[in-house]
Length: 526
Image 1 (cartoon, one colour):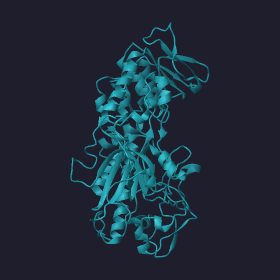
Image 2 (cartoon, helix red, strand yellow):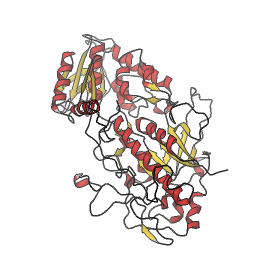
Image 3 (cartoon, rainbow, N blue to C red):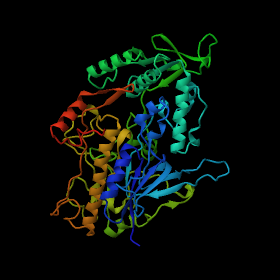
Image 4 (tube, rainbow, N blue to C red):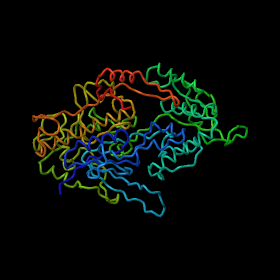
């Protein structure tokens, strides 16, 4: 049986889903995509705030993965989607625990950890969402206090649509029962919550939006923030700008027998300036945390100070080791590195799994042949027995990023992980806005680059002609694509009927109307 090679995609949200689609339709024979996602359905998180307030629509937030590998449901495909949670990441394999679609039961045995070996990997695990829309409740202890709800251990969830719908209905009930709501954070999420609560429950609740900046949506033009502020005030929302919540004042709600509400419990919180705010429900909409622990555990150098994964312009994970030398050795010696990669997913106890990747310098025996031949910005492969610096991936030298720039016009950066890519909210993508549409286009760049590397190796091995696949009719190799972020764009809904757009998004609409074809750097998924 012919050996099957694997491109693993971790996470199937906006970025990972798009990467899997492109890979499934572009990889040559003998390759498969394995998409690992802890949710049974794609969670359209942009609707979570509304469906946590508006009853009867929560089912619309969960989209089936039926078309993850193409435009139709095809059972005769080598590609696989795994409903499970990744538990560890290593240079050439992952471990994960599969989820059951049935209700969890104490009588059922715990699922056994499994191992998946890969040749290439795209890390698209995004970020942990703020507690008001975090179905997995990574901040469940604080959420218990703020939402006054029943404590949910995050390990009890299975990531199913039914669980997500029940979770949203519970939030709807909490909002419905409260007479006063405090939303902390004047970004898109806080604005959506504040405006939807005020619009769906007009004149019934006291809604306060607290923002530490003096302008809403500070990353965009001031006119947009001013328009949003006026719209919120028209809905009756009390907007407090320039005041930061004192997190030490957060705690369990206190009983207040004089308060006219249905529960008799109220949060008493303060800002750093001493201003006190009372509310039955407090929703912290103050950002999200990159989901990069797996990458940090594999190699802490890959994760920067902000918790984001360092990447090259080609979206490859960037870990430099300019002093490490890798002896590629004889062809047959390197070839042995890929012989142990299984054709199908293996299941074995964690105790038998290989340990995290070797410390650097990396021995040649640990590097699959396709990584050795993935010379990204140099001439054809190094001769036998020639020693070269660490495996190559160069960042774009033309983008000024200030003191922390990962590019240099005088010296190209090299990475020891040219086979591992990172996209979306988990990646430090050169100042790109953390949003679904940027993850989508970063994933396209990563997927196309994986396909280029796969076909490059196939041509060198003789299994793919030089004129096949990419429209090339010579023996020249197509350069890997580089990602450049476009202007930050946003569309914000205020209540159920009003929508506001950033100026950059309006300009994009005009370009489309004038038949201008935007590139991936100035496009947006709507």
